[in-house]
Length: 210
Image 1 (tube, rainbow, N blue to C red):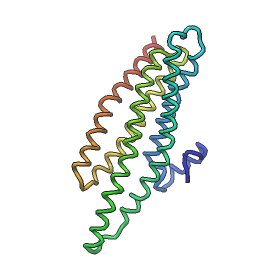
Image 2: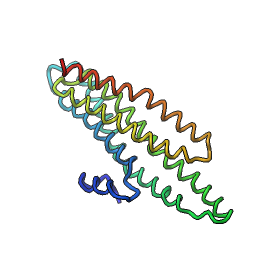
Image 3: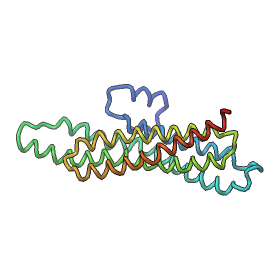
Image 4: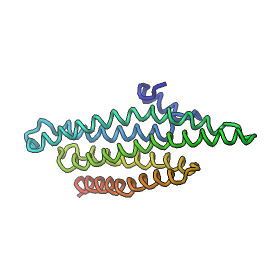
């Protein structure tokens, strides 16, 4: 089942059930896509306006990147579901005998890595989206500045949400070197981009609230 082609109502309803997918990773990807789309909205409201002719080519380039990010993040909704289902099944593998324990350990090593890689990619996309939104906020139409602030906020939330899907899986990894590599990259993105998104929000708020 593709979760990118269902209605918002159906996606939300499925999310609220005990079904393993979609979950926090897919929800984070969707929120990130919405944040990126809001950045693109700022661009759409800027292009073609004489007041912003000097930055029009810059804005068009930003929009091209934003649209590509939207597609990536929407695709990651289904990729997250595809990666998580094998993990949820692996947790239920029997461990009665030594052979069963060894088999489960082998399977877990593979599925935990796969389950980390998708939310890591969601995080990377959200970071790129925040970079773009920073530029939209600086160059885009003032009538759409609030949308840049909302976009930054959504992308930061998606970034943080996806990180938790990384951390819950690295915690279970037997390969601690791999786990720490994932954790280090995830923490670096959080440390850089959550404050940047907060700065964008604060800047937008400062321009709106006098």
